[in-house]
Amino acid sequence: MPRLRYRSKTPGSRLEERFLLLWREAGGPELEREFRFHDKRRWRADFAHMESRSLIEIEGGIWVNGRHNRAAGFNADLEKYLEASLAAWRVFRLGPDQITLPVVERLAGILRHGSAQDSRPIP
Image 1 (cartoon, rainbow, N blue to C red):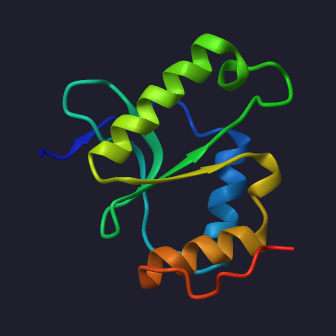
Image 2: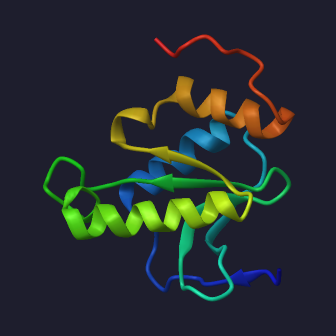
């Protein structure tokens, strides 16, 4: 499949920027931003780790009746994530409460090493 990319003209959201700050602090591997993972649809993932075929989605607006928790938006997200999974992408979804250093460190370790080194739940 060809590598399709779309770069947004606007900077990432505050949540995406917070995630990146923690990702760098955790020593996470290189990520591609706004990665277009589907060759026919215009779907993009917020971040992609190419080596492990992992997509990271930052879900904003969940407390303000945003796109992700209204029926049409939620259903569209389900379609997008299903297609990503069927195309052998692993999808990690993070909301505001998951963008913490312990979670980001654990995710970085999983992508760096290819499997969960520590299967304990995050406190």
